[in-house]
Image (tube, rainbow, N blue to C red):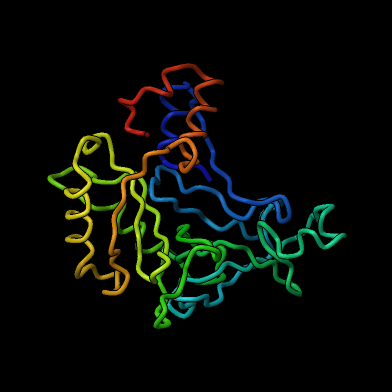
Length: 251
């Protein structure tokens, strides 16, 4: 799925009047489709449609509890395309997922925002990947996606502080956050950004005390560490330099 900014660029700068977002994989075809006018990565499950899945459910994973409507997404696809590497076992772990009986276990962690688990009309939000959450030396889980989304929503004086945030464990068992400020805070000192982040996360209802990062670092290699930058460059090569305009707010 593309970001809300990517869709805005296609509609406005590239002049595409009708942009429809779909989410799926090589193995399972379409899983869900974008919710119109939504900018929070919300998708409606494509259950029962010709290219959709036959059924879906969630299972708990790490810090995420399926009983609370958030967990690893399992789908019962109408068909499963097998990658050639699967036959040799080279892709057995599955870069995108793994077939487990009738269910295809995706790496996606989603949160139900409308409807209920398994329903045809449910709306889900992409939250995390199974490869991202990690445990601290004391056994506490860090819900990376949930904390990163909270960081990306930090508002300072009516403006978003961060465009993107990634969490990672340090060798000493503490948490580091690599962040990329929005254009409004591009020149802000690292200490100021860190102060805003830590202040906003302390006491946040969706962030536990041990998930507040000990270190906040500013990303300085966007082309290597930010897939969105590569996507924007690709769009620019196809649709013109207007898509790479820093004034668009995408960095």
